Length: 274
Image (cartoon, rainbow, N blue to C red; front, side):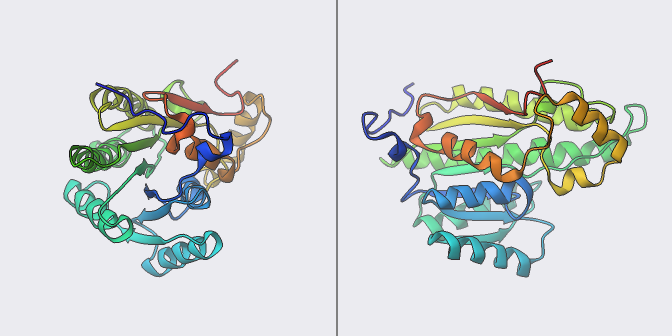
């Protein structure tokens, strides 16, 4: 088993971050973290497929068009329910064909949902909903990507790159909210990435980003008293803007991180340190 080598490690450092000529795909790519990741990958030169579920097709297409116009690269939106393995397989293959002329280089498994219930109160359906999107959906996305990457390498093509969006919730217990299902699903994603990074080293790198509290719609619904507790626990003293994360994803997607696989990159303003 051999990890893909950097093509030219002695080149000027900024060139290591270029994604020119690459094709990328981001699930949950029309809002929040996923939107900024898609934008960042496009800004680095990659053609990008953004997958969505709940956004309207019109708004998704408009988002893709706006990113394409500002970056000068092709960006296209695809509706896809990540809890359907068949739908994920079909969509990734279609995106690779339409955007990458049959090639796919980078897949970001980012789609996720959250809910807050006490452990004794979860219904089977509420627990299953979280696991289906956050864990099963992430696995189906990675699995479909892995099959494409393996086939590419066997045909003499480029190795691939999978990046999971996990969470600091994978490595701590959040308070005051109760969200055992979410935390468990994200912990499973981190371990999944570690396992796949070893299994797939011949044809792909696999890493995680674990954000802390990010200023997205997912947090807007929470009570102000919860937010006060969070701010008191974050050494950085503020929430992170989604756009502040895009550089980390470009780093992991590019040859700048060529010797990095199986890692969990925590970006949390120091939240997990005290």
